[in-house]
Length: 410
Picture: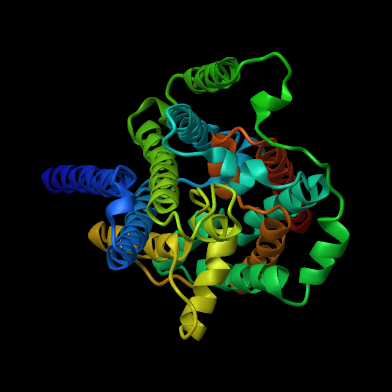
């Protein structure tokens, strides 16, 4: 018992320490935006750009590591948050997701309001409203997370814990997402799915609701989430400290990811004025566009980075994937929960099928349950809200189908 308390204390201390380290890196990058760029030589500008890039990558490793460790120790999974509504009637994970969402929304909107990150430049807000992709991709991804055994972050954690079923899901996810991004199904996605769109100048929800200020939307969403969390029945696991803290920590990783990338975007625009013509410069947006956590594109990019290496370079997204794998592996070894586990053959089939659905759905929807479900909704992007709605519907549909199959076999 004493040993368990010591481990818990050490774990909390490490998590707080990593958050402090990330905050230091953010402030360091943010400081570059205050330098008088006119006095810098070409060599100094090159050195600062390299320093910013390395700090962003290190932040990605640390933020991913935190996410992986928290998910591993808490068993947090947005897939369970979706389908537990019909499988176990236990809303603990759903309330943990609500807590993560509350922290992510409030934190991100505070950063936006104070000018620390320009979420209007993010893909969630500035991309075209590909409504059919959000609906179809979200639904397919939702079905996939049920068959695959976890959401986009959870399958990485399961693989790092030694679960071979999780590894199969991850590899199928990478194969399918890569094919849909750059391969055999890419033309189908572009020609027949992304062509169905609405031309919106911005997907920022407060801008789409005429006459309603942004703070009113944020307060309304926040109150709804708080009411849902506080209506947990007596005796629910939610009433302890584990799930609320896990949800809050996951929400903070989203906020810190926005913060470091927003700081890097502003610093690069300020430092390298000769290269970048303004905040809408395509070169600036391609590499330094404000972003947060997501795994649809980064998973595929990570695999390409590993197998090609030459000509490829690590970025924030790739760093977060490595971070999740490393953080969850360390947490599993530290807690002695790492075990090589081979599920039954039927489950392997489900893992493969689910991973393929997840990869295709995530790319078609332009984001996964973390990308849209936390990072995207934290910006109050309409497309993210639509996608997450259909991820929920897909997950519930998949869970009901599996329950039906099980009952049929009895």
